[in-house]
Image 1: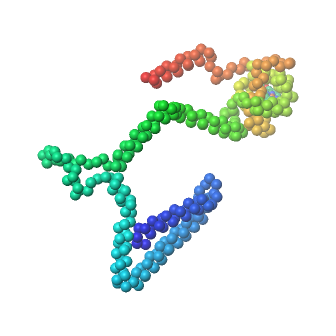
Image 2: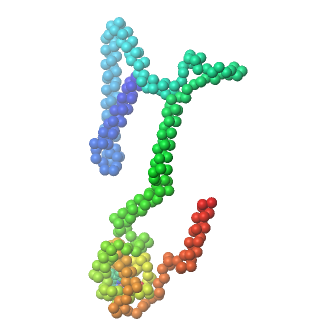
Image 3: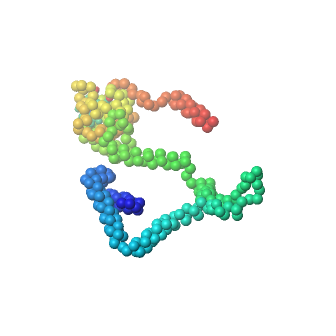
Length: 316
Ligand code: HEC
């Protein structure tokens, strides 16, 4: 393979074959070449084939050339030379036009008539590539101005907010589909009606025998008051349901019977009893539960003042 064109042809052939293979072979979200390593062999074969074709074509040419008379050989050489010089002529012309420089022989036409100690100045035109780039920036500035100053284009802060919002929606979607992933560390109070209804169904099926339908308590403690033996709040309640109560008290572990999402649902449902008054409430057992995350009113106020101070310093 002597000419550069043959190399380009082989490379182009390989690239096209590669994409055709990737396109034609269904390999899921993996690349076909990683899923089916045999394709490497196929590509190697294709490569050898392409090289062989190039070599055969070339030798054919040289055999034919040698078969020509001397006259014809000269003619052929001349036409080859002409073809070569014409190669890429279009691109060369465009390149030259974009530079817009005057050939050195014509410089006399654009030299300015001042002369400082032999230093003279050429009145070159701006190179077209630069000039068109400059016009483009003017057009861009116009569009930008109208879009963001006249009409309401999104600025970076809004773009950021939009992205955060998109991520939030995606996260919620993910959580909805991956609810079974909850455990005691990630469980959160579910508030959607469908979850609470599911929780209620689970409660009525498994728990009313000991806790009563309204959570008033029987064998098990009252679930409607603020007093908890094993701790209140979604995490503790989830944990109690998952792991069971103290040994021998009668509250078994439910983690083998209920899926994590079901435990989260019934735990959330149990917490809806809070503040209701059951028909025959069992007396309170355990300790008054205060949510450690809820900040006392005074502290919360302080925190707000603090955060404004921080904001102001940021503005400075
Ligand atoms: C066999 C009776 C029984 C059943 C059925 C039962 N529990 Fe209990 N439950 C108890 C007892 C007894 C306790 C107290 C455990 C202790 O003192 O350690 C308790 C405690 C609890 C507590 C903690 C109360 C506290 O004050 O800390 C929660 C929450 C709870 N149960 C929810 C449920 C849920 C939800 C179900 C149904 C999936 C259920 N229980 C089924 C008997 C039962």
